[in-house]
Image (cartoon, rainbow, N blue to C red; front, side, top):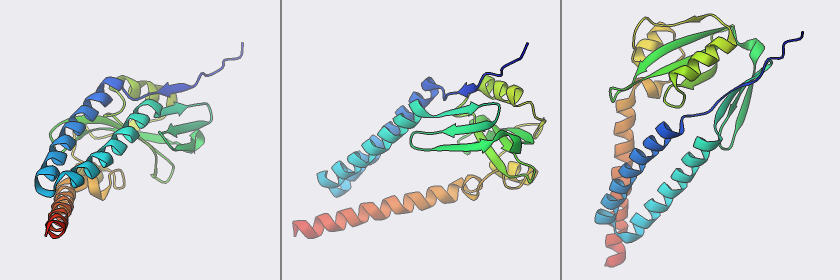
Length: 197
């Protein structure tokens, strides 16, 4: 009897996704209120419109994103994109519990090619541990990784190229974003002052 392999389809957890969206939108409301206080109603409405667009994109991604493993391909599908990777290029996997700057950790899986390049990265923030277990089992490749939880910098030391510069320097990115937001607020206040004069 011929055995037919069924496709494995992984979808992000809706509960965790909605929780993250709720926290993000709570922060957006606070930032918008701050903009309203310092720059006026017009700037706050513009900020709210921007947040609404971001929320719409995040919701679309939450419902459309998936990872599909077929006999021939690994397909990454998002809200507005689809990337296909030949399954034959995947030669091994690295799995790590990555500790984020806020203190929480997530199980992360990297599928690597013969040159050590990352073909696919599955974030535990989007997919549960059981989903990653199923993916590793279905892929059937050797799996290695650090013995315990690691920061992005430690994971980079374990295997260079797995984490980006931004992941390894989150506080610098945070300072840069804060600086941009302060600059935007100051420009809004100056424009409001000039228009009121």
